[in-house]
Amino acid sequence: MHKFSLSFISRVRVAFLHNIKKMTEIGPIHLNIQKKLTDTLNPTTLEIINESHLHANHQAMKNVTSKETHFSVSIVSDQFEGKTILQRHRLIYQLLDDELKAGVHALSIKAKTPKEVEQ
Amino acid sequence: MSSFTRPFSQYCLLLTIPFSRGLAFRQGPRLTLGVSSFTRGFVFRRGFTISSRGFVFRRLPKMVSPNNFSRSLSNALKQTLDESVQKNDVVLFMKGTPDSPQCGFSRAVVQILNTQGVDFKRIKTFNVLEDQELREGIKEYSKWPTVPQVYIKGEFIGGCDIMLNMHQSGELEDLLVKESLINIEDSPIDSQEQKQ
Image (tube, rainbow over all chains, first blue to last red; front, side, top):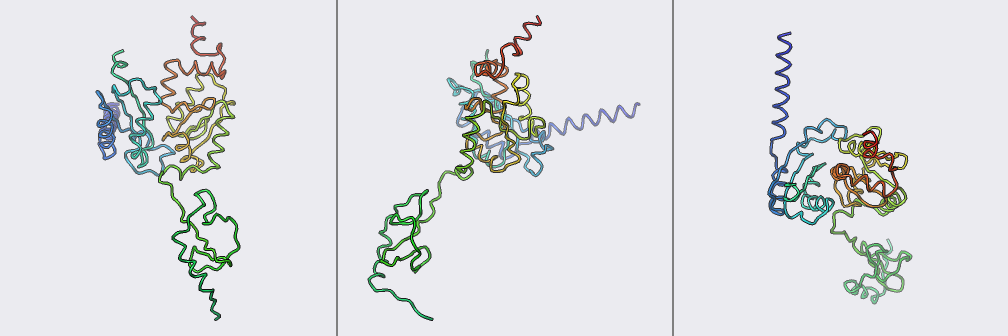
């Protein structure tokens, strides 16, 4: 019992650290996304998370070797003022067009204005 | 080996080649002088033909559109997509099928539509994983680079994030009620109120 629970805990710990390591590795596409969004949108808050390893075993990702396929982007910027959600998403997709063609399969976007965040 | 020679005057007409203006455009027949059907004359150089009367026909070079997108969306596919989007109340482009989605985002959209109580017989779904041409074409058609994509009554709504947002804010339910895709009595909020 004692040995079993120790190894279970250590296995959980290993998996946890493995996930953190995967999510914090910053590759070239990550940097490009960061640069483009910062330069154009002047965000007050910008958070980019690499979620590729969460999808690595999916059927659709079978033949893909890239480590940068799925990203989650959270942006707060006042340039989104007066734009519908669809317009904000389209704007971001246009800015990141090159990355999307270069192997990024999915971008999960949360785009808000500073006022919306205060609420 | 018989050598074939033409009157000198006809060779002089070769000099007109740089000045022969193309009347055909990209979609049309690619011959100068605007003649679409012409019995094959003497080909003195690949792409150039002299008719018996001495007119020089020249094949225009294939014009390549500078826009990368237009390669993926053929006219036939565009028509099919137009038809599907106009004819069906709800169209869903996803990875996999509603019974077995192959992607977390696609699964989320299916779950949202289920929760809203939309009848799946009224939804036309396309599995982009089955058809590579569709997978690339739909990105150009909607000007949206990711899948899943949702169309309601011919209008592009968005992807998983937008659907989730609208679901949480109640906008989606309003839209579905307005387009009579769900009944007001079946909507989740009303059923909660009834329970209370």
